[in-house]
Length: 117
Image (cartoon, rainbow, N blue to C red):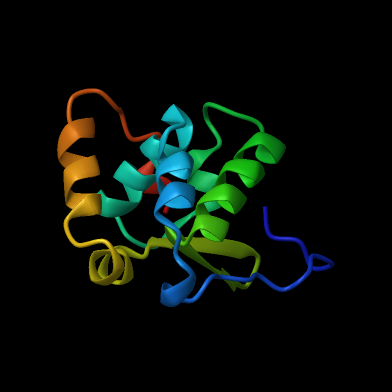
């Protein structure tokens, strides 16, 4: 999903995290599944999530999560690596991500092929 001609990735500072943007980003089942997968296996490439959706659909989901401050993305070679910004989210909204992960247990199946990471 990483493009050589794409503009640089922007990530909000912790002071710019907005609870309603974060919660809105987490209301989508695909984005929530991405978060669950990243909580279990930090540092997954975008390509491991491709089995359920097209690259363009996933790109949008990752952008929404990144712009809300939920994930951090970094281009490494030809791969875009994703990590959950759990520590920063915990600092800004204590316990929120733990609650989201707890409530999603059994409801959401991580959509990543960790063997492809």
